Length: 371
Length: 97
Image (cartoon, rainbow over all chains, first blue to last red; front, top):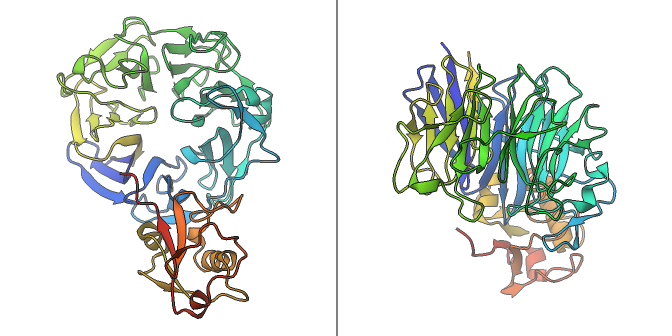
């Protein structure tokens, strides 16, 4: 029988939640790495027992942890992220040059085919790759060297490369996103990159339609249609039907189009999910109501999903990497909040139940569907 | 010589409240950290940056009731540390949640 494993990164450790395919009763294990910030953990599609976790703290820096048994035991692996060549500068918040400095890993994206290969998106923004299971890391420096790097600026959370999407149909194609530089794509395995931000409109930069400078919060793709991308930008929910070459807005009737998380139904590529957040100065859900919004039309027409979610006095946020879907039928949808709840829906969002209510603030949620 | 690590690094290195370390040659901050990282590779990058070798800003080095954090990394540590009479203490800032 199928099983589901939910990997939860929090401000104070990692948790592994497992259930059978009914997704009604959950076993909760953790905290792993108690007291440390776990920005992200994710499993290899090629070997589900191989997990990678980003463990960091303001005191002790960055560690990378690897598991070969689905998160029961862990071992620290390589944590040296050295930029290639002389790193140079990007822009600081005030527009002055600021040296590139490694701070932490925001996101791991394991290869679709090789458990030993994994990509890391880091702050200050760069993309690294390991081909030896995380022991050593090499920068794909064509991204930072694209030419616009000196113009990149940090978002409020830091200048982070937070989204990495590997194209299942084209091993040379990778999409990434950086706050607040925008989205980029390579078609040659990471050697050369181009910004893919045409159609984005951001009022917080001098030229609202500039080639770079957009605060992209997250991007999602359905593996059956790798040319169709959905984006939650700082403000605006966007869609591209040409692999990012152009974008158009699909915010439609959302109560607010600010937010962080976005994901796609496992079996319906036109069904997408977002969690609207009130604004960039009030990072909590509007009207005290925790609502996931679902569009079954690829955007523009949205319905609020509220059954089982608090509809009064709720003021949590859902961060960019804190939503995921499983691949069971019906599709399971999961998200974690800054209030420490992890909610699950076993019916594609129609109804929700909390798996746990009182974890530390949730930074990331990933799901593995296991046979 | 003797080294005392903060709690999180003891957990990471799977050591107790104090560890014993053999240091070849002059006992300095650099030689102590080199020996520590050689014996416990999982500590690489946690006390000093792996690229710049700078001490992490929220950590300090104490010994013999002195703060040695700002001493040059190749300066000799006190004889009492080299002989093992006093420990070399890596301490984390008392801050944060």
